[in-house]
Length: 300
Image 1 (cartoon, one colour):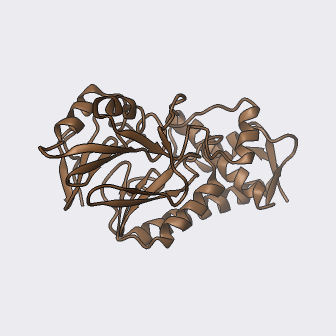
Image 2 (image 1 turned 180 degrees about the vertical axis):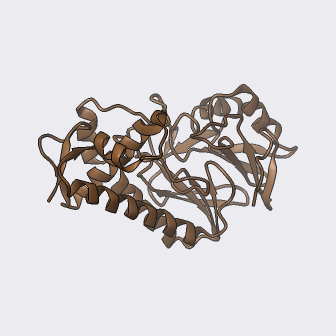
């Protein structure tokens, strides 16, 4: 496992037939940067080409060895740090882009309603014009010369999020990461879907997870259990405060995230809203009036 930040643009062998190239886009949201994976020894699958970046495009193309070619481009989801380079990479290689669907594909019904009230993306930024060449069904198989992947639809972080299973290895995008919890920001993030997707990932019984950011996760079951428990603890904190009286997501975030810097409170507010909507679906809370980002919620 990595203990220090890898050098951007330098291919690192993770396993026979699998390499990783780090994109040069470190940030509080992306950690060291976006991980791009190259799978195969002849026909190469590129998983998550990353952000628009000429140096990163050059690094991917330069990693193609004699006798190799990029045959498939796979995108876990269409956030701006994962998908935009797919277009340029497809142009240079002739490979098709495979993903679940456009950026709004897979959005849950309640999040569609919330988006209709005017709530816009406030997370990592969604690529609005993302359009894959091949839309993958849940359970689709993608194969190359010496590799085979199974695509699993795992909405939650984003409605069109997919993970790709390679035997006991899973490329899990931003569903699970070792360095932080996944951002769930309505209307594109849905906590109810996210928790279901985490359970589905755990059922695959992977031996290692290769995430969109950070080091390999070598104890997937323990990490997923921790993440679910973390969400349950946050839910309990929200319900405890709501028992004192109705409150908005903003007010709850300020009560619960007492050590969070002010600049990060808007993200915390969206996280609380995600929990409130999940609790609403479980009939534990309800908005006093219409369901909007500014609604006051009360316990039932």
